[in-house]
Length: 283
Ligand code: NAD
Image 1 (cartoon, rainbow, N blue to C red):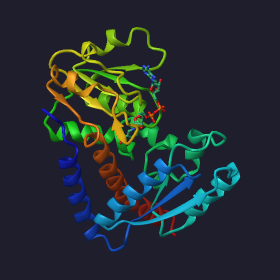
Image 2 (image 1 turned 180 degrees about the horizontal axis):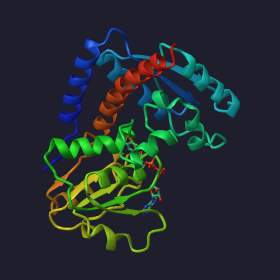
Image 3 (image 1 turned 45 degrees about the horizontal axis):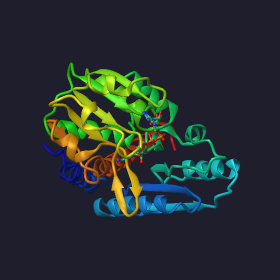
């Protein structure tokens, strides 16, 4: 089975649009881009287009590549204070002199659309309602859409970043999978991947996951995206792996559309939380 992400993404989009139609205000997402990375600009344009489809207003703040940390922080604080901005996205990657993990701490947790503030990540650990990172929560929604149960399964996540791999592992635990996380220093990667009922790769190295590393009948989710020439490639050698497994996501058209859909869903959630936060603070 090919796990096409466009179908569930469309469904989520429709639900988000219905929710927005019921609101008496327009949710607004602000994106901060530092530098001129062409890939980042393409992503931001795609997100803006999706926001427009469902009725989310967007604004973009562009800073030069050599912007000081203090300037980026003041931009975030200005957006935090702005009542009509409900969600803030800092487009990654940031230039090397700006520490992304440290910077996300300055975004109000209620406006943290990517769920990367330590408060939101902490809520993920304690399984309290919060805003979860878009890509891993999109993977869970994708598997649910195709009625793939994670309960009691051996799940192996390759990649341990704060934005994808680690929250992915936590969300799989929440669904009662037994989780193994692999990374660049993992010895004998295939020993672990071969044990996976559900294998999720989030590395960014095309060809990393080959057919001999995958168990017969496994479910394979490819989060990796690498642009090679004009082509987008995942981490998994798709054709050969597809012959062995019971389900697999394509690249593109698998996890990517789900990430965008979850961004829209999180923006509405942020809009609700920002409003509540203001109401609770008598503002
Ligand atoms: P990252 O560079 O922060 O992390 C890469 C991870 O891969 C690290 O944990 C590292 O330890 C691990 N790794 C590197 N080489 C390895 C190897 N040989 N064996 C095992 N592990 C190895 O990247 P990220 O931000 O987590 O993104 C990962 C990939 O997912 C990228 O290709 C990115 O473009 C893609 N991505 C896709 C979406 C989407 O919507 N589909 C969203 C976010 C990221």
